Image (cartoon, rainbow, N blue to C red):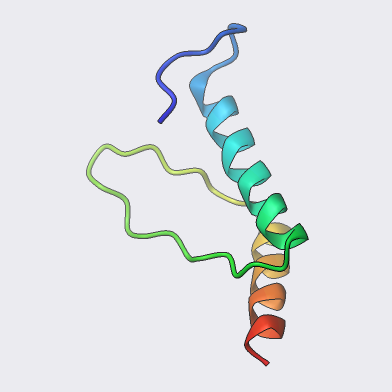
Length: 65
């Protein structure tokens, strides 16, 4: 959980960075990327770029084969 920013950037910037870096690591290591659970009330959700979602779906499908 990120609750503050060390460099003045909004927390949302760091949340996106953390999520995207975690996904990049999983893809690089050939790990299946799980789908997000439904958000809790008032929870911030990082929306992924459509290109990244497609990349995740292709990678997960290849791992299932």
